[in-house]
Image 1 (cartoon, rainbow, N blue to C red):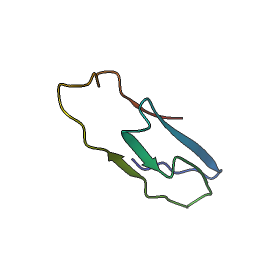
Image 2 (spheres, rainbow, N blue to C red):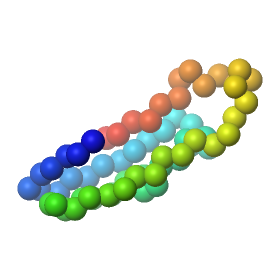
Image 3 (cartoon, rainbow, N blue to C red):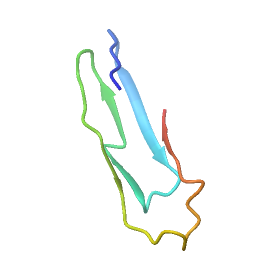
Length: 60
C-alpha cells in the first residue's frame, strides 16, 4: 500500500496476540516523501491446538 501526503503521517500497528504476531516498527511518524519498510512476523504455533480465529492486526 502506498500513501502519499504533503503533511506528516503517524501510524500505530496493534495486534491481538503480541506474543505471536510481531510488527517492527510498531509506530512511527513519516514526513512528506518519506517511506518505511514494515516487518510483520508470525511465530510458529500448533494448528488446531489453539483458538486463533480472533487474532488481528490493526493499523491506526
